[in-house]
Image (cartoon, rainbow, N blue to C red):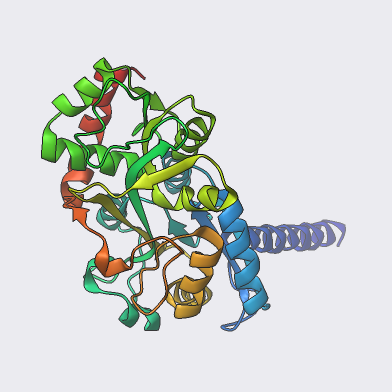
Length: 338
């Protein structure tokens, strides 16, 4: 009898351990906690922290039954985290939202994405969504030419005008930024690697991030730099000595996609977040909180920014970006160092 009692006791303890571990894992992965109308979801994103914090608060205010957790870092760090979890067999994210559309072709090839059609996707044009239904542009970011208004009275009007010895130049490194990889590939397709070789010969520097380019232009450490448009407009409103031009050849136009991961245990709630981002209300929120140009034509863009259909853009071959990503980084390192 004593031996039988011990066996029963051990069985109860083991069952309790399994239930506890299972509950803990559900909490980490965003498994359903509140049925179809609510629950917990986890977003991995490269959207800047102050902006994603505001989006998180606004979304949860509009959807109080949903808990949204966010991991935020640069595109490369976000992808590294996701791939590390994939290799470990335990992806904790429900949603992924980074800058470079070519990255999502990698995700598709690895069978990581969940295919679905958000009801709000009808409000965005075909160029802003994956024809196979795996990802959708949640925001639009554009690489443009920024300059210090105190030190530059005749700013460059074109990409070629940037290559002038009178400027102190900076460009965000593609070793860390997905948007920078796209910009490098797009400019190399138009001008060749000679463009960046000359950029370097004129004293041009690789800068660790777009936001650092912005800050260095504001302080005058750089006078001209390439960076993302949405980071500049709030600084202009604050009265900082920075402005930007839309290059006459066209900007580097980057629809920044959002997708649901196939491993998500709460896909129905993740869909609520995607629909929020794509909706008129969500896009208006992104305009207000992040100064992003909306991906919908029926939403008014930020003050001073053109409407979506008025943006002149350089062509970007996203499949080629994906295919050549490593080669781009290697050539960049050869020119600028690691």
